Amino acid sequence: MPRSKELLGAKRKLLKGTIDASTYEELLDAETKYIVELQEKNDIDIITNGELRRDNYVSFIAERLQGVTMMSMADMLDYIEDKQGFEQILEILDVPAISIKNAICTGKVTYHKPLVADEMVALKEMTNRKVKATLPGPYLMTRSMWLPALSSKFYTSKEELGKDIIQVLQQEIDALSAIGVDIVQFDEPALTEVVFSEGKTRSFMCAALSEKKDPTEELAFATQLLEAVVSYAKKKGILVSLHVCRGNWSRNESILLKGPYTPLVPLFETVLPHILTLEFSTPRAGEISSLLSSTKLREHCILGLGVMNPRTDEVESLESIVNRVKEVLQFLPKDRVWINPDCGFATFANRPVNSLDIIDKKLARLKEAKDLLRANYE
Image (cartoon, rainbow, N blue to C red; front, side, top):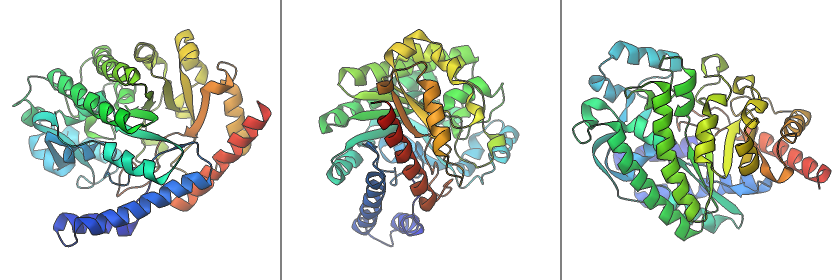
């Protein structure tokens, strides 16, 4: 969710040492509570905390793990071999190099502090509804953290780094299980960069900076990492969601990746999370039938159906949402169809793609759709 200017300013002051941590935490708690109340007002069944503590959905891990350093894209330029290619990425992404930060492996990676478990303790005190913890997935973490000029001093390859990432996430799952979190969601947007970028680096994060092998090898590596983490969470009794989008940093749809989920179906079938949380609100996502042609996915997975574009001011019509759900009901029973926005509303703290007043209207429409669908399909 978007952060207020006051909260962003307070974070800068905290880093400079001009305000104390308790002052910042009070403001953070107040804004998080507002986000929770916004969801409850719109009768959202499963509550998240809005990720207001994070500068973006992956780089925050630098503050939580040993052996990881927060670096801006500008900081990393000195360590990039293909500087011209790197600058082209920034031009395509339409973002200044200083505005995006990433967690980079600069030592042996070990679990130091909870990644989000402490946030979930606070969230459970704010709501009686089911709660979802959102985490960067193991493939995204490994890809985005691997900067060869620095990381290779501690790991021979990103595959070796991946083993420690699995351990870190399993330790976090232990903490989330102890708290009683209902759902854990792993975000893996770099998967679409692998299959849709046609050999060109177009990732909206630094997850494309590390050497990119043949897509088949990359997907095999991603499958191995995800299977280890998802199966571990399943054993702990937590519902597991896998979220895959195509980039959510810009309102310019023409620069975002496009293509159906078909190339990822083998990975989905092997990893087999309880929930596949996917974007389907724009034509860039392809046909739903291309995903649900898989018998295994139809029989075993809930579809978290993205029915709202988080990057537009337009509030989707009730008819469009209901028709999208009806399309899915040709393949899945009603209890395995969930509806949600395609992705978050503020991938980067300093670059939200929407405002809270529009978000409120979109969530209200989501409630309308839910109520109508439940009344019609009792």
